[in-house]
Length: 73
Image 1: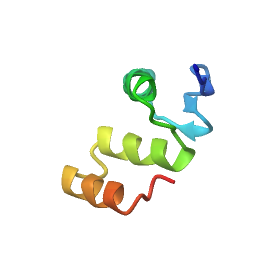
Image 2: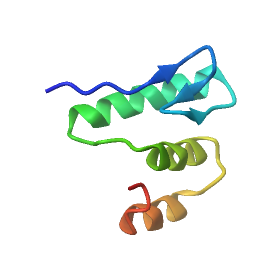
Image 3: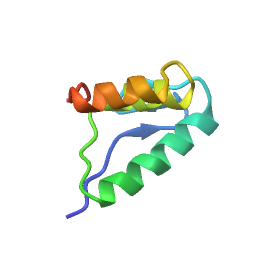
């Protein structure tokens, strides 16, 4: 079964999560799509975490800790 997520390129949002530029939004959307194909179910909190990692706001070690804590739920 195929699930969709809300992507608004004009307002630079994915599931209501704001992005600073189109390039970051699109690369995040592509990564989400690939992971969704493998069974990942994105949440707004999970998208925020991925966005923060992609933009350098959090580092890989923090990302791993958040993943282990299931903070994306």
